[in-house]
Image (cartoon, rainbow, N blue to C red; front, side, top):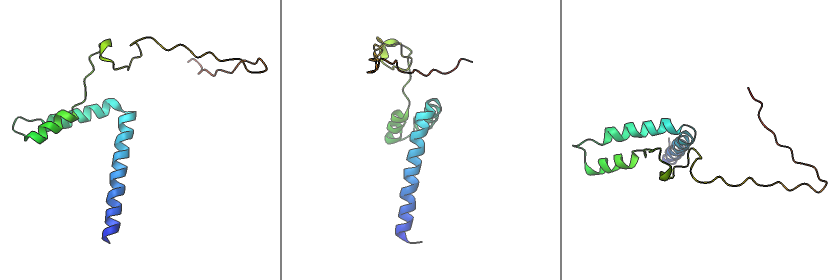
Length: 104
């Protein structure tokens, strides 16, 4: 195996790993927060070097307080809701269609 081919495989592997992590953080935020907390807990031991402890503090996920003043904006209850956009009628006066999911 040539060196350039090996470098290509390593770069593709790194890109693939980063993209999988980004997708996991987007689709499963609680799972990745637990994973990061577990890694940070293992790195943050009293006898660990300073760089390991700094990395552990950087990896530790932020804890939500459940307070409306922390600005997390996950529940949608913080602050006023933006006004609904008014749909101007079409040139022929027809109303736009609004599709809604069926109730179960």
